[in-house]
Length: 630
Ligand code: COA
Ligand code: AMP
Image (cartoon, rainbow, N blue to C red; front, side):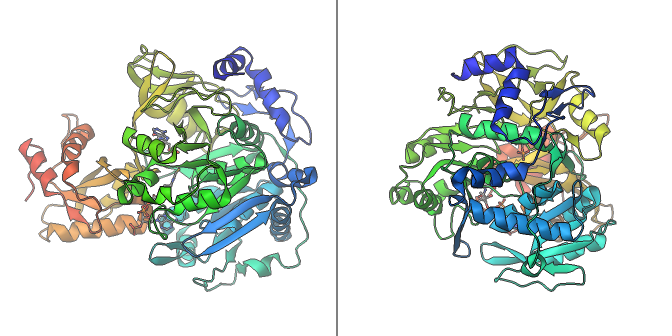
């Protein structure tokens, strides 16, 4: 069946469609129905089914004779390490870690925070939690102690699983001091931590810390704990409007069903083939397609620790594709922009045999046409932009390569996937005409595998997503649906920006900047950047009477954001202004600031290593009467 017939079959019988998809999952007790709307709008999927996600990702493949097949290929150009872990080995490793966690009292429903770089043990830890029915919450390594503490207080984990360090080009990042600081400042104290000691840097262990191997030694293999289809598998925090991140809750059953469906139908990957998502387990793409999706489908997943350029060169991606015979590759457009910048003629591409590759998938940010065309020309395979969010867990719109290779329209991430009825709404809450811009919303209920709510924040879930347009989920993106049903995602409607494919809150940065004693008022907006898509730019109004050099305040502010949020915020641009452009009612005119900044964006240096004061922007704002500046 092609795309249109498949979509139509879902429209005509969503219940039958998802019950059919659920056949691909092994259930302890089969669900009697797909949708449970008894507590709408808090919808649940497969709520009376019983299953275990880890069993579906590992054990069943061993039982089916795939024990010797690679489950995980670890390739770490940044350390030089490589390893292949079979399904049988991975099952044993995960069951042992789960046994050790159970021995320390971790069980169904307990939360476990995971703070690890891109090593196979990160996937092992996620699956060990899933095996026990415990709920993991992975925190990206680029976040600072304060962000970690916020998540510890919200998720109240019983245990933390971390590594001694992460490795970034030219520097080793000690994770343990960040973890210690986070636990110091958090109100909730986890019972214990398990620390993977990496050879690049050993961590000092405290009384409640256990070294990874010691912790696992002698543990019994844990069986898979049966969980309800609607029981949570994980919480993943994502940026919202304020400094308090949103804890997206992903239930077990729908997640397994939906991700399994996507592997063949969207990515065209079969059991036994190699799928590579060059992301990080700290992001949703990493959850869905470094860990769960490929393993649920019996495919091989790659855990890649490195960067697209410089580790060792701009041919790293192509070397990995060739060496491991990757059939389907997924990354963010920013990674391709980074490669294109140093290898515009594709000299490194030519050195490698990429014949295994069937398609490239891009997501995480808007894919610009230049990048898509360059990638198409270099790789000679379809380049598929697809659109999704942490909340949905997989793509809302795509070109479903396994169903039908529909034509690609440049600038569009494709057509809605079954389960998603996507509309562009006007201010009046009614759909706008095809081709007109609107707020992109999805008719409720959202399909299986999407969020069931926010962790212990039902009211926030409703107000953030469901209240603006009754009957719809508000995506926070603005865009267009054209006459063929293709989507175009143009911008966020909230204060979220997208830096190098990473979703960040300008509100969170403003909260940090406001805490600087010399800053009276501030605003952070996203400005266009050739490499990272967007960069945060801060406007600072200094407290009356501050006579210090502006450059000092700017440098301190840059440092403060790095310390409080983390290097991932990439906050390096700020300018001092006398006042912010505001409406009469006192609302900051972000659009005005963004327009001026964007006009001047081309004048910014391509890479910014030092904090700089943007004189040009200050001058322009002043010319418009908004800012005095000194
Ligand atoms: N732990 C600690 N620090 C980290 C980190 C981690 N896991 N990941 C990134 N950082 C740091 C970086 O070292 C950098 O620090 P710096 O300011 O000292 O240079 C900072 O956070 C910003 O990181 P980033 O914006 O990613 O920039 P980069 O120069 O390190 O890399 C790209 C740029 C484009 C190469 C990289 O972002 C990339 O490969 N992205 C594509 C894949 C992806 O992340 N996808 C996500 C969704 S699909
Ligand atoms: P995240 O939750 O980190 O995956 O970020 C989700 C947001 O990233 C979306 O709401 C969009 O704003 C943006 N995004 C993700 N994929 C795309 C895409 N293919 N095109 C345009 N924007 C995208």
